Amino acid sequence: MRSLRRWKPEAQNPTSRTGFLRSLRFRLTLSYVLFFSVLLIGIGLLFQKTLQLGMDDDSRAALEEEWGAAKGYLHIEGGKPVWIADPTDPEEAYIVERLRHVYILADYNGKVLEHSQTYDSIGIDSPQEIGRILNLPMPEIHVRRDAEGVPYMIKAGYVRGDKGHPYFFALGRSIQGNERTVANFTKNYFLILPGLIFVAGLLGWALAGRAIRPLNLVAATAQEITGSNLSLRIPRRNANDELDNLIDAFNRMTVRLSESFDQIRQFSTDVSHELRTPLTAIRGQLEVALFTAEKPDQFRDAMVNALEDVEKLSSIVRALLLLSQAESGQLVLQKTRLDLGEVVADVVDQFQIPADEKNVKLTATLEPGWMANADRTQVERMISNLLSNALKYTPKGGKVHVSVHRDPEEGWIRLEVEDNGVGIPAENLPHIFDRFYRVRNAQTNYTQGLGLGLSFVSWIVSAHDGAIQVESKPGAGSRFIVRLPAAMALRESASEPATTTV
Ligand code: ADP
Image (cartoon, rainbow, N blue to C red):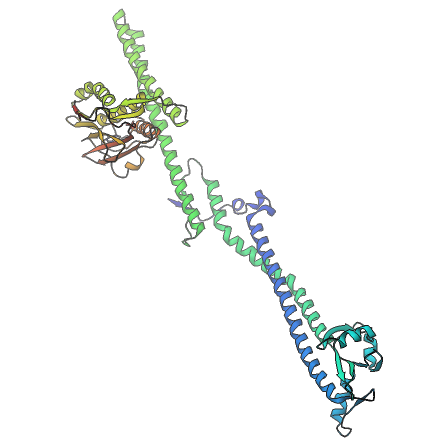
């Protein structure tokens, strides 16, 4: 067995033929890149959102704190805002200053009492808006932009004045820093994204190449295989994965192919040999008659002998034709209700003379009345083939026994042909029903045949929905067991179990 370790560059690169875009490697890489692109974009968007929400939460918490502080410093006395801060504490003054950076105070009717310059740029709330917010149970937080587009988070609600009157109060803080951070993240992430996808593509290309390498190997090996070069095997990777299964299946297929090719080669040799022998004989007989025969009797003898050989030739051709008809489905069975015991008895009778000539004892135990729906001609052919094999492969002084009886399984009839001839070695047994298969060893070398008889038997058995099996031991003999389905009324004369022994 020769292992293939290298392969031709043209086979290694099937893209040259299939087109780069349709190659499996390209398509695998493309799926990989698409998958990674979607994944990375998804992850980027998720991070962006999480970052934004986190920063908004921080700003909201800070705004809440400022809102609470502002309410502490702001007093409304006689309809006027008064910010109370300790003038001696510079820090407190600074805090109040900061709180008043983005703010507005308006009365219940929407009249603005005080507002910061920044709030002016954001836009003073309309009296309707003020009325709406004052009617809310809780203060509201929203985002608005100033004239330059800077975003502010604003909390708007009410505060009570000295007489308990509600006043509209809104406080804000810039969230431009948040927006910038998120924008920077997004820009940087989506800038490096093509690079990441490119690296993923390269990785995918390499992985896909690795994954389909054995496939290329299979393709390359398949290309190298020809009728005369069937010993090539693809080395296993020992990963025990799907590709190893494929390699195993491929290797088994080449083994089978190799066996078939061997059989066909052997068959051609056998057929030529089988046909040549009678042809040479005919030619010899005709030449002798032509050059040496003088009397009519001598001519007649030559013609009789030639005719016998022509008959042999026709039977070989007939067998070949029949098998090819059977296998191509052209042979239609003519099934009738048959007494198997009777049919077998007829065939056994025909084989008595050849058995006697060969000094082989042919006996039969036949129970009549076992009925089957079968084609008489084909069943006779099946029994003839089994019997002629049994006689052919049983030496002088041997025994052949045929029997028809009930199968242990209900509804089946059993036909057995048993001999004590040369037997079949165990390693050949699985193949003997293959077309053109012949066992070749010292015992069978001098027997003639084409290896077609048992393939025909096997076809006939399965065409009758039956089964065939063989038990054999080299040197001890063989037993062929055919099981056929019995016709509905199983036995015609079930009351009298008669047995014929021939
Ligand atoms: P062949 O024309 O060679 O007899 P078959 O298809 O009938 O072809 O049989 C296939 C092979 O099976 C034979 O070559 C022979 O080796 C083996 N065989 C068949 N029947 C017997 C038997 N009764 N005893 C021993 N070997 C047998």
